Length: 363
Image (cartoon, one colour):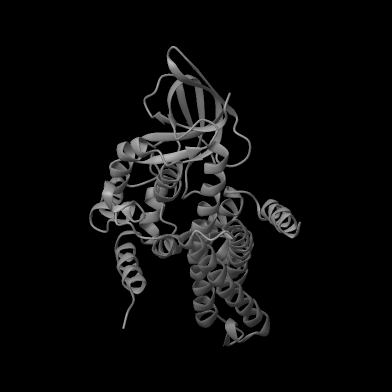
Protein backbone atom coordinates (compact mmCIF):
# COMPACT_ATOMS: atom_id res chain seq x y z
CA UNK A 1 0.00 0.00 0.00
CA UNK A 2 1.40 3.41 -0.98
CA UNK A 3 1.23 6.43 1.28
CA UNK A 4 0.20 9.96 0.38
CA UNK A 5 3.89 10.94 0.41
CA UNK A 6 4.71 8.11 -2.00
CA UNK A 7 1.96 9.18 -4.38
CA UNK A 8 3.09 12.79 -4.18
CA UNK A 9 6.69 11.82 -4.86
CA UNK A 10 5.72 9.68 -7.85
CA UNK A 11 3.59 12.48 -9.27
CA UNK A 12 6.25 15.17 -8.86
CA UNK A 13 9.09 12.96 -10.09
CA UNK A 14 7.13 11.90 -13.14
CA UNK A 15 6.29 15.51 -13.94
CA UNK A 16 9.88 16.71 -13.52
CA UNK A 17 11.24 13.79 -15.52
CA UNK A 18 9.11 14.94 -18.45
CA UNK A 19 9.65 18.69 -18.05
CA UNK A 20 13.00 19.27 -16.35
CA UNK A 21 15.60 17.05 -17.98
CA UNK A 22 19.14 18.42 -17.94
CA UNK A 23 18.96 20.24 -21.31
CA UNK A 24 15.77 22.00 -20.21
CA UNK A 25 17.30 22.94 -16.85
CA UNK A 26 20.25 24.48 -18.66
CA UNK A 27 17.95 26.36 -21.02
CA UNK A 28 15.89 27.79 -18.17
CA UNK A 29 18.99 28.69 -16.18
CA UNK A 30 20.35 30.61 -19.19
CA UNK A 31 17.08 32.49 -19.80
CA UNK A 32 16.78 36.18 -18.85
CA UNK A 33 14.41 35.51 -15.92
CA UNK A 34 16.03 32.30 -14.69
CA UNK A 35 12.72 30.45 -14.56
CA UNK A 36 10.08 29.25 -17.01
CA UNK A 37 6.71 30.97 -16.59
CA UNK A 38 4.83 28.20 -18.39
CA UNK A 39 6.41 25.52 -16.21
CA UNK A 40 5.64 27.59 -13.12
CA UNK A 41 2.03 27.75 -14.23
CA UNK A 42 1.89 23.99 -14.58
CA UNK A 43 3.47 23.45 -11.15
CA UNK A 44 0.72 25.57 -9.62
CA UNK A 45 -2.19 24.69 -11.91
CA UNK A 46 -1.75 20.99 -12.67
CA UNK A 47 -0.02 19.89 -9.46
CA UNK A 48 -1.10 22.58 -7.01
CA UNK A 49 2.39 22.72 -5.52
CA UNK A 50 2.51 26.46 -4.88
CA UNK A 51 -0.47 26.14 -2.56
CA UNK A 52 0.80 23.07 -0.77
CA UNK A 53 1.34 24.66 2.67
CA UNK A 54 -1.17 27.49 2.20
CA UNK A 55 -4.27 26.97 4.39
CA UNK A 56 -7.43 25.88 2.61
CA UNK A 57 -9.21 29.11 3.50
CA UNK A 58 -6.75 30.93 1.22
CA UNK A 59 -7.01 28.49 -1.67
CA UNK A 60 -4.23 26.09 -0.69
CA UNK A 61 -4.05 22.45 0.33
CA UNK A 62 -3.16 22.99 3.97
CA UNK A 63 -0.48 20.27 3.84
CA UNK A 64 2.51 20.10 6.15
CA UNK A 65 6.27 20.37 5.81
CA UNK A 66 6.62 16.61 5.43
CA UNK A 67 4.83 16.90 2.08
CA UNK A 68 6.71 20.08 1.23
CA UNK A 69 9.96 18.22 1.90
CA UNK A 70 9.02 15.55 -0.65
CA UNK A 71 8.49 18.21 -3.31
CA UNK A 72 11.73 20.03 -2.52
CA UNK A 73 13.67 16.78 -2.50
CA UNK A 74 12.44 16.00 -6.02
CA UNK A 75 13.19 19.53 -7.20
CA UNK A 76 16.66 19.25 -5.71
CA UNK A 77 17.26 16.04 -7.68
CA UNK A 78 16.91 17.90 -10.97
CA UNK A 79 18.14 21.35 -9.87
CA UNK A 80 14.87 22.87 -11.01
CA UNK A 81 15.33 26.63 -11.58
CA UNK A 82 12.14 28.10 -10.13
CA UNK A 83 10.97 30.61 -7.51
CA UNK A 84 9.49 27.79 -5.39
CA UNK A 85 11.82 28.16 -2.41
CA UNK A 86 11.51 31.94 -2.34
CA UNK A 87 7.74 32.04 -2.84
CA UNK A 88 6.39 29.01 -1.01
CA UNK A 89 8.93 28.53 1.79
CA UNK A 90 10.02 32.12 2.43
CA UNK A 91 7.16 34.26 1.16
CA UNK A 92 4.19 32.20 2.31
CA UNK A 93 6.09 31.23 5.43
CA UNK A 94 6.69 34.84 6.48
CA UNK A 95 3.04 35.77 5.91
CA UNK A 96 1.79 32.80 7.92
CA UNK A 97 4.20 33.49 10.77
CA UNK A 98 3.24 37.17 10.89
CA UNK A 99 -0.29 36.42 12.06
CA UNK A 100 -1.48 39.35 9.93
CA UNK A 101 -4.91 38.20 8.71
CA UNK A 102 -5.29 41.14 6.33
CA UNK A 103 -1.91 40.53 4.65
CA UNK A 104 -2.60 36.80 4.46
CA UNK A 105 -5.96 37.38 2.77
CA UNK A 106 -4.35 39.83 0.35
CA UNK A 107 -1.38 37.68 -0.73
CA UNK A 108 -1.76 33.99 0.10
CA UNK A 109 -4.46 33.26 -2.53
CA UNK A 110 -2.14 34.63 -5.21
CA UNK A 111 0.70 32.46 -3.95
CA UNK A 112 -1.54 29.39 -3.92
CA UNK A 113 -2.67 29.99 -7.50
CA UNK A 114 0.84 30.71 -8.73
CA UNK A 115 -0.13 34.19 -9.86
CA UNK A 116 2.02 35.91 -7.21
CA UNK A 117 5.74 35.30 -6.81
CA UNK A 118 7.13 36.50 -3.50
CA UNK A 119 10.54 36.68 -1.89
CA UNK A 120 12.01 37.84 1.41
CA UNK A 121 14.97 40.15 1.97
CA UNK A 122 17.06 40.63 5.09
CA UNK A 123 16.07 37.36 6.78
CA UNK A 124 19.69 36.38 7.51
CA UNK A 125 21.80 38.58 9.79
CA UNK A 126 21.09 42.11 10.92
CA UNK A 127 18.75 44.03 8.57
CA UNK A 128 20.53 46.67 6.49
CA UNK A 129 17.30 48.57 5.86
CA UNK A 130 15.64 51.19 8.02
CA UNK A 131 11.97 52.14 8.04
CA UNK A 132 10.37 55.36 9.24
CA UNK A 133 6.73 56.33 9.41
CA UNK A 134 5.22 59.72 8.78
CA UNK A 135 2.50 61.50 6.88
CA UNK A 136 3.21 59.36 3.79
CA UNK A 137 3.11 56.11 5.73
CA UNK A 138 6.07 53.75 6.04
CA UNK A 139 9.16 54.48 3.95
CA UNK A 140 12.23 52.22 3.73
CA UNK A 141 15.86 53.06 2.95
CA UNK A 142 18.69 50.57 2.62
CA UNK A 143 19.90 47.50 0.77
CA UNK A 144 19.04 43.83 0.98
CA UNK A 145 21.79 41.60 -0.40
CA UNK A 146 21.50 38.15 -1.91
CA UNK A 147 17.71 38.16 -2.18
CA UNK A 148 16.62 34.88 -3.80
CA UNK A 149 14.69 35.63 -7.02
CA UNK A 150 14.73 39.27 -5.98
CA UNK A 151 14.86 40.56 -9.56
CA UNK A 152 11.69 38.77 -10.72
CA UNK A 153 9.41 38.60 -7.66
CA UNK A 154 6.09 40.43 -7.81
CA UNK A 155 6.18 41.22 -4.10
CA UNK A 156 9.10 41.66 -1.73
CA UNK A 157 8.83 41.15 2.01
CA UNK A 158 11.65 43.08 3.66
CA UNK A 159 12.92 43.02 7.22
CA UNK A 160 13.89 46.52 8.34
CA UNK A 161 14.82 48.28 11.56
CA UNK A 162 12.42 50.87 12.88
CA UNK A 163 11.66 52.66 16.13
CA UNK A 164 9.77 49.68 17.51
CA UNK A 165 12.53 47.20 16.55
CA UNK A 166 12.98 44.95 13.54
CA UNK A 167 9.75 44.67 11.54
CA UNK A 168 8.48 43.04 8.36
CA UNK A 169 7.23 45.13 5.44
CA UNK A 170 5.63 44.40 2.07
CA UNK A 171 6.97 46.21 -0.99
CA UNK A 172 5.38 45.70 -4.42
CA UNK A 173 7.74 45.27 -7.36
CA UNK A 174 6.64 48.56 -8.92
CA UNK A 175 7.14 50.66 -5.78
CA UNK A 176 8.86 54.02 -6.15
CA UNK A 177 12.53 54.10 -5.21
CA UNK A 178 12.95 50.33 -5.58
CA UNK A 179 15.90 49.01 -7.57
CA UNK A 180 16.75 45.37 -8.26
CA UNK A 181 20.14 44.33 -9.56
CA UNK A 182 20.73 40.70 -10.60
CA UNK A 183 23.91 39.27 -9.10
CA UNK A 184 26.43 36.99 -10.74
CA UNK A 185 26.52 34.01 -8.39
CA UNK A 186 28.10 30.55 -8.25
CA UNK A 187 24.80 28.67 -8.58
CA UNK A 188 23.59 28.99 -12.17
CA UNK A 189 20.20 27.47 -11.33
CA UNK A 190 19.13 29.87 -8.56
CA UNK A 191 19.05 33.62 -9.10
CA UNK A 192 19.85 36.23 -6.47
CA UNK A 193 19.65 40.01 -6.55
CA UNK A 194 20.64 43.13 -4.67
CA UNK A 195 17.52 45.07 -3.70
CA UNK A 196 17.91 48.78 -3.08
CA UNK A 197 15.26 50.94 -1.43
CA UNK A 198 15.27 54.73 -1.39
CA UNK A 199 12.32 56.28 0.45
CA UNK A 200 10.34 53.32 -0.85
CA UNK A 201 6.68 53.10 0.29
CA UNK A 202 5.96 49.93 2.25
CA UNK A 203 3.18 48.28 4.23
CA UNK A 204 3.81 46.96 7.71
CA UNK A 205 3.14 43.22 8.02
CA UNK A 206 2.13 42.09 11.48
CA UNK A 207 3.15 44.21 14.46
CA UNK A 208 6.02 46.69 14.66
CA UNK A 209 8.95 45.11 16.48
CA UNK A 210 7.87 41.54 15.76
CA UNK A 211 10.41 41.04 12.98
CA UNK A 212 13.04 39.23 15.02
CA UNK A 213 10.55 36.56 16.04
CA UNK A 214 9.27 36.13 12.49
CA UNK A 215 12.79 35.99 11.03
CA UNK A 216 14.00 33.42 13.55
CA UNK A 217 11.01 31.14 12.98
CA UNK A 218 11.24 31.60 9.21
CA UNK A 219 14.92 30.65 9.23
CA UNK A 220 14.11 27.45 11.11
CA UNK A 221 11.53 26.55 8.46
CA UNK A 222 13.80 27.53 5.58
CA UNK A 223 16.69 25.48 6.90
CA UNK A 224 14.50 22.42 7.37
CA UNK A 225 13.05 22.81 3.87
CA UNK A 226 16.42 23.33 2.25
CA UNK A 227 17.81 20.25 3.98
CA UNK A 228 15.24 18.23 2.03
CA UNK A 229 16.29 19.92 -1.20
CA UNK A 230 19.95 19.20 -0.43
CA UNK A 231 19.06 15.56 0.24
CA UNK A 232 17.55 15.27 -3.23
CA UNK A 233 20.66 16.68 -4.85
CA UNK A 234 22.98 14.45 -2.84
CA UNK A 235 20.93 11.37 -3.70
CA UNK A 236 21.19 12.22 -7.37
CA UNK A 237 24.96 12.75 -7.41
CA UNK A 238 25.36 9.44 -5.55
CA UNK A 239 23.34 7.72 -8.28
CA UNK A 240 25.43 9.42 -10.95
CA UNK A 241 28.67 8.29 -9.32
CA UNK A 242 27.53 4.69 -8.86
CA UNK A 243 26.22 4.45 -12.41
CA UNK A 244 29.48 5.77 -13.84
CA UNK A 245 31.56 3.48 -11.61
CA UNK A 246 29.64 0.49 -12.95
CA UNK A 247 29.98 1.38 -16.62
CA UNK A 248 33.41 3.04 -16.88
CA UNK A 249 36.17 0.51 -17.52
CA UNK A 250 39.89 0.89 -16.94
CA UNK A 251 42.53 -1.83 -17.13
CA UNK A 252 39.85 -4.24 -18.29
CA UNK A 253 37.51 -3.83 -15.29
CA UNK A 254 34.81 -1.47 -14.04
CA UNK A 255 36.32 1.30 -11.93
CA UNK A 256 33.68 0.51 -9.29
CA UNK A 257 35.62 -2.67 -8.54
CA UNK A 258 38.58 -0.65 -7.24
CA UNK A 259 38.66 -0.20 -3.48
CA UNK A 260 39.22 3.56 -3.64
CA UNK A 261 36.05 4.06 -5.69
CA UNK A 262 34.08 1.60 -3.54
CA UNK A 263 35.04 3.45 -0.38
CA UNK A 264 34.18 6.84 -1.86
CA UNK A 265 30.73 5.69 -2.98
CA UNK A 266 30.11 3.96 0.35
CA UNK A 267 30.95 7.17 2.22
CA UNK A 268 28.52 9.06 -0.02
CA UNK A 269 25.77 6.54 0.68
CA UNK A 270 26.28 6.74 4.44
CA UNK A 271 26.11 10.54 4.34
CA UNK A 272 22.96 10.50 2.19
CA UNK A 273 21.19 8.22 4.64
CA UNK A 274 22.24 10.41 7.55
CA UNK A 275 20.97 13.43 5.63
CA UNK A 276 17.64 11.66 5.19
CA UNK A 277 17.26 11.18 8.96
CA UNK A 278 18.32 14.74 9.81
CA UNK A 279 16.04 16.34 7.21
CA UNK A 280 13.05 14.20 8.24
CA UNK A 281 13.54 15.13 11.90
CA UNK A 282 13.64 18.84 11.10
CA UNK A 283 10.55 18.69 8.87
CA UNK A 284 8.66 16.74 11.53
CA UNK A 285 9.66 19.32 14.13
CA UNK A 286 8.13 22.07 11.97
CA UNK A 287 4.86 20.19 11.61
CA UNK A 288 4.71 19.37 15.32
CA UNK A 289 5.59 22.90 16.40
CA UNK A 290 8.26 21.21 18.53
CA UNK A 291 10.19 23.39 20.98
CA UNK A 292 13.43 21.81 19.78
CA UNK A 293 12.89 22.97 16.18
CA UNK A 294 15.77 25.50 16.38
CA UNK A 295 18.07 22.61 17.30
CA UNK A 296 16.69 20.18 14.70
CA UNK A 297 16.80 22.80 11.95
CA UNK A 298 20.41 23.76 12.63
CA UNK A 299 21.53 20.14 12.90
CA UNK A 300 19.85 19.30 9.59
CA UNK A 301 21.04 22.40 7.79
CA UNK A 302 24.66 22.27 8.93
CA UNK A 303 25.05 18.53 8.36
CA UNK A 304 23.17 18.43 5.05
CA UNK A 305 25.11 21.45 3.80
CA UNK A 306 28.46 19.79 4.43
CA UNK A 307 27.34 16.34 3.28
CA UNK A 308 25.84 17.58 -0.02
CA UNK A 309 28.97 19.54 -0.84
CA UNK A 310 31.16 16.52 -0.03
CA UNK A 311 28.98 14.27 -2.20
CA UNK A 312 29.04 16.71 -5.12
CA UNK A 313 32.83 16.96 -4.90
CA UNK A 314 33.20 13.17 -4.66
CA UNK A 315 30.99 12.73 -7.72
CA UNK A 316 33.39 14.87 -9.74
CA UNK A 317 36.33 12.81 -8.50
CA UNK A 318 34.65 9.52 -9.43
CA UNK A 319 33.98 10.83 -12.94
CA UNK A 320 37.58 11.92 -13.37
CA UNK A 321 38.37 14.22 -16.30
CA UNK A 322 34.86 14.28 -17.73
CA UNK A 323 33.50 15.44 -14.36
CA UNK A 324 35.36 18.74 -14.75
CA UNK A 325 33.87 19.62 -18.13
CA UNK A 326 31.18 22.22 -18.77
CA UNK A 327 29.08 19.71 -20.68
CA UNK A 328 28.77 17.30 -17.76
CA UNK A 329 26.10 18.14 -15.11
CA UNK A 330 28.42 17.37 -12.16
CA UNK A 331 29.53 20.99 -11.88
CA UNK A 332 25.91 22.20 -11.70
CA UNK A 333 25.35 20.10 -8.57
CA UNK A 334 28.69 21.21 -7.14
CA UNK A 335 27.70 24.85 -7.64
CA UNK A 336 24.27 24.34 -6.07
CA UNK A 337 25.78 22.43 -3.14
CA UNK A 338 28.27 25.17 -2.32
CA UNK A 339 25.78 27.99 -2.72
CA UNK A 340 23.11 26.22 -0.66
CA UNK A 341 25.66 25.50 2.04
CA UNK A 342 25.91 29.26 2.70
CA UNK A 343 22.41 30.46 1.82
CA UNK A 344 20.90 30.53 5.31
CA UNK A 345 24.10 30.79 7.31
CA UNK A 346 27.20 28.66 6.95
CA UNK A 347 27.43 25.28 8.71
CA UNK A 348 30.10 26.70 11.02
CA UNK A 349 27.87 29.64 11.98
CA UNK A 350 24.93 27.34 12.62
CA UNK A 351 26.99 25.03 14.80
CA UNK A 352 28.05 28.03 16.86
CA UNK A 353 24.39 29.02 17.23
CA UNK A 354 23.59 25.43 18.16
CA UNK A 355 26.17 25.46 20.93
CA UNK A 356 24.72 28.70 22.28
CA UNK A 357 21.20 27.21 22.31
CA UNK A 358 22.32 24.01 24.01
CA UNK A 359 24.40 25.83 26.61
CA UNK A 360 21.47 28.12 27.40
CA UNK A 361 19.29 25.05 27.88
CA UNK A 362 21.66 23.73 30.54
CA UNK A 363 21.34 26.87 32.65
